[in-house]
Amino acid sequence: MQALARALRQVWMRRLDDPRLIDAVLRHPAFVDRAPLERALSARFFAPFCHQEVTRGARFEARARWSRAIFAAVGLERVRDAAIQAFDAHAPTGETESLLDSVRACVARATTELTFGDLSLEPLVQRAVRDIDRSIKMIGRADLTVRRALRDALEPVLDCTDAWPEATSLGAARAEARCLPLSERVDHVGAVLLATGVIQVSDTVTHALIALAQHPAAAAASDDALVAEVVRAFPVNASITRAAGVDVTIEGARFQRGEAVTIVPRRRARALGFDPSRAAAGSWSFGAGARACPARRVAATLAATLLGRYRALGCKSSRATGTSAASRSP
Ligand code: HEM
Image (tube, rainbow, N blue to C red; front, side):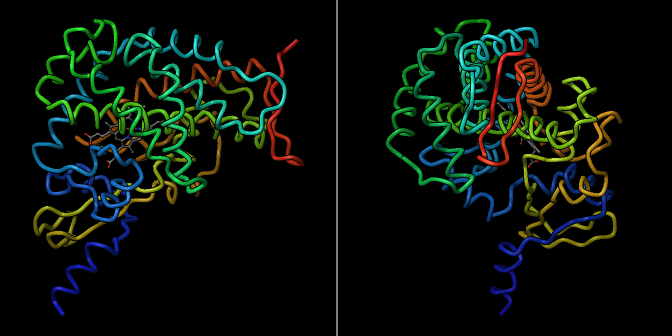
């Protein structure tokens, strides 16, 4: 009976709603690991790549150190340039059936350029990331052939740390990468830098364009303000999960070792509505504490630059057909 109760605590997540408790839990060293349910789903969604959130302990920390080193070094001017070049290459003209597919193509190209400094892997990145995105959103079955092809293509590139150009995400954090075996580098680049990163930025830009169509008064807001408000109001992470590493009491709340919790940023966002003219109120859209998103600066810059290009292009959604029309501004 006790074993059953323990198993249920791990699978059936306890939802936290009190803002003070949420903040304290996210920053607490007892709450480092993601919940078992998220780890299991993640293992499936990103296969054959192993996402950072599936790993634990020293393995998890080594990958986190690499991400932090990369994003501390990436220059925002490079991010803007990569976004503009990607938009020029992939901008839609006329009607497009899926705005998300169009935006994702731009983000995937910019991310490929920023990561490797060249575009030789772009066709594979485009196909594999689209496939992962569609299966995460449950609108398509996973095509492991295309994902394995990306993994095979990443191996020789990620093996040669000396060959990584200085002015790339990889080159900026060579020393931290060398602490990881090749298989971990491949998993991290495939699942985190490429797949998760591209999907989250694409969702943000797409949400922003839809929000603009739904809230015409928001057109006066800057691209940066829009991205900040969209990330707050429509968090791309539906939930942030954790499992307690030890028995612990935080802010008067007691948690047993192994107990899983979930934080749903959208619950707090819903009450405030959508208004980019206010300075974005505190939210957990990028997490909090030591585990907060290390790519926040880069992600927001990439999203705002692309959003600006799409807005200049003139973008409106067609409710009748479910398609989006994009046309060059006069
Ligand atoms: C608008 C876009 C993004 C949003 C809203 C976002 C949000 C988040 C959130 C909420 C977390 C914390 C998860 C947790 O505490 O369990 C996180 C962590 C992380 N994010 Fe992002 N993210 C975005 C873009 C990106 C991009 C572009 C990358 C990389 C290319 C990235 C890489 C990471 C990594 C590596 C972590 C794990 C940090 C750690 O545990 O040490 N994120 N992100």
